[in-house]
Figure 1 (cartoon, rainbow, N blue to C red):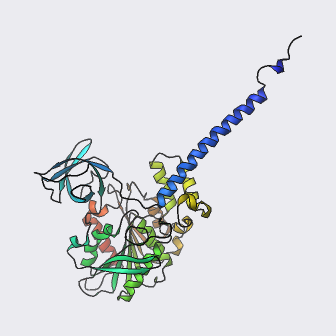
Figure 2 (tube, rainbow, N blue to C red):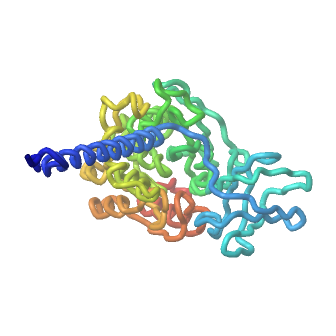
Figure 3 (spheres, rainbow, N blue to C red):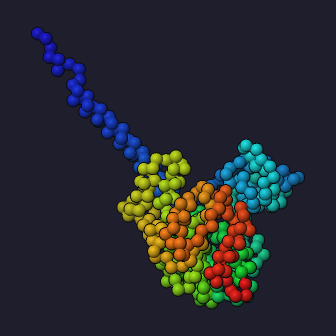
Length: 399
C-alpha cells in the first residue's frame, strides 16, 4: 500500500504560512528597532546636553602661538572663532587659517598659551568668539527677569545715550546667552541697548518640571517676560534677534507676545523656521531611514508619548511651522542664513521669503556654516543688519 503523497513533506499552504510567520517576525523586529531608534532621537532632541566635541587638537606650537586641529568643514573656515577645551584652558580664541593639509588645519592662536599648558585632545569648535561679557569692554549690568519658571538671568548693555530702542538677543539650543555677545558691538554702535536673555532649561535659567526643551513652544514666554522688563526700563521699540533655535523662539514671541505693540522688527541668524524639516534633515545626515524621523516627530507631537520622550508636554509642530503661519506675521523680518548650514537647512528660510515677500528679506551666505556668519564675514554681516535697520528706520536718529 502506497503512502499518501500528502502525508510527507510540507504542503504549499504550510510553507506559505511558515514564510509569512517568519516575515512577520522579521518585520516586527525591524519595526521595533526603528521605533527604539526613533524614541532615542526624540528624547535627544528635547534633552539639554553638554557641548559635544567635534574636533581634535593635534598640536600646539607655543613658540609660534599656533594650534593644529583635525580638519572638518568648520575648522577650515576663514575668520575668527573659539575652541572649547579641557585642561589648563577651557576656551581659546582662534584666528585665521595659516596652513593645512588633507587631515589638519593650523590656525593662529589669539589666546596666549604658556609652555606649561596642558590641553585635552578632544575639543569643540565654536562660533562664539567672545565667551564673557567683560571681553567686549562695554558697560553692562546683570538683570533678573521674573518669568513663570523663576528668575532668568540676563545681561543688559546700555546704549551710550539713553535709548528707547532695545534689541532682545535669544541664543540657540545647547548654548547660552554668551553666543549672542558677537552682536552687541554692532547694536551699541547704532545707539541700541542690547539685552541678552536666558530661558528655561538652558543651564542659566530655572528648569521646567521635566527639564526638557519645548523647541520654542514654551521658551518664548520667558523672552516675553524679558520684554516686560525692558518696557518698564523705558524701551518703546523692541527688535528681536534669534540664533538657531532662538530664531524659532523669536518668531513665537512675534506671533504671540502680549507686547507685540512694541516689537518693530525681527533679525534671524541661521534660524529654525520649521522643526519638522530640521529633524528630517538631521536624521538624513545621520544616515537614518526617513521613517525614523517621522516616528520621532510623531512621538514628540503626541501627548501619550511624553513618558517616552521625556518632554513636559507634546511639541506643537504645527504651531512652530512659521511658513504655514506666514499670513499671521506683522513685523519686518531679516534672515541671514548659509545654504551650506549643515545643521539647520535653509529651505524653510527661502520658503518664508516666498510666502511673505512684503515682510521678509533674506541675505544668503555660502561656506559660512551654522551660526558662524559673523565669524566668516563680519563686515558683510554687520553692514547687512545695519542697512536693514536704517531702511526700516529702526535706529535712533542720532545713530
